[in-house]
Amino acid sequence: MEKSLSHTVKALMADPKGLLAADESTKSCCKRFDALKITCDEESRRQWRQLLCMSPNINRYISGVILYDETIRQSVDGGMTFAEALQQNGVIPGIKVDKGLLEMDNFAPQTITEGLDGLAERLKEYHNMGARFTKWRSAFQIADGSPSLSVIRANLMVMARYAGMAQTAGMVPIVEPEVLYEGDHSIDTAARTTGEVLKVLFEMLELLKVDLSGLILKTSMVLAGTQNTMSTPQEVADYTLKVLNKSVPRAVGGIVFLSGGQSPEQASANLNAIGQSGHQPWPITYSFSRAVQDPVMKLWKGKAINTKKAQTKFIQLLAQNSAARNGEYTS
Image (cartoon, rainbow, N blue to C red; front, side, top):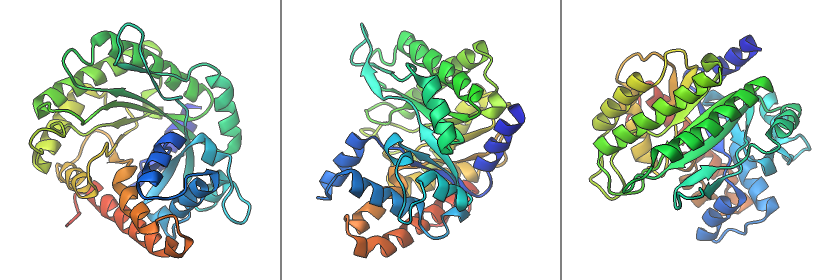
């Protein structure tokens, strides 16, 4: 089991590839569609995710795709399931397994992630559908008194339980304790909060004897809040790597960055600065959603006639970030 998990981790972290996060909930996807006046129904969402997953040459830049429950149950044109089509193209199918955020009793508006109920059965089903890795996200907002240590501990104990269950089911867990960018906080506050969150996460994972080599950390880059002065790429690289080297055990199989609302240019520039900072104890790459999808969706507009040019733009953005992973991106 440990060998197969570490094998999957190595394949997911293969240079120069990244992971595509295509696991938005129906509500989140519809919000983006509505803003562009795209009809949001099951078929339009299938067409959008097919555009992404079936883009020509995606396997040059993407090692794995995180799917949503709706999508893993759907098929691409021609009849193969999304998981089968990805596998045939040398891309590993993955699946988001948490059930989203709810306000935590006695700590609102702070949230806790739901989804442990029935998880073992769902993991078996997803494995049978072809998924070989999974993802679970918690979110921490920086504000006065937030995130509290109680909320951090509660979320990350749940996350560690998920990680152990995923490994038992033969799938690599991606753990995503996202520190949100929204706010007026400084980069120093972001660094302190990210460090606190990661410290507790790995305490919980160790407590539950999760195999760190068969696990991937998906984390925020460390940068000042959206209502503060924008951090420079060099600042982001320096602060991010300092926090990771202090907080993340060397045994972890790999680290992937979320884009978290950064613009496509900002996300690539920051990733590039990290890539230029030299060798790190773990392989590091990207797992972006909006930073590689927003410009593509604006080109597509829900119309089949725009599919080819949208896919061309998508592959350009993936190539840009695969170069940035190694510090070789030039804007």
